[in-house]
Length: 80
Image 1 (spheres, rainbow, N blue to C red):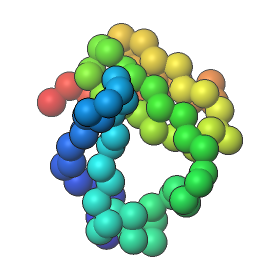
Image 2: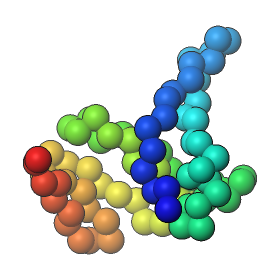
Image 3: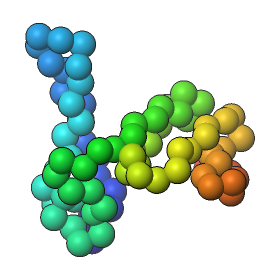
């Protein structure tokens, strides 16, 4: 099971576009939720320097300094 990996962002030489490299070990994992061509939503949590990628079909995630809100449920981030 590979649900967490370190990877890198690749900068396009011709544009201000960056590409997120998702390693094949993660993509081939049976719990990986995305399929080729599927629309996704990318959100940036500036408070925690995190990128959140979710299916465009799912409800929008709201980000605040206290945590996330998904479908009206507050998720607090533990500091460790």
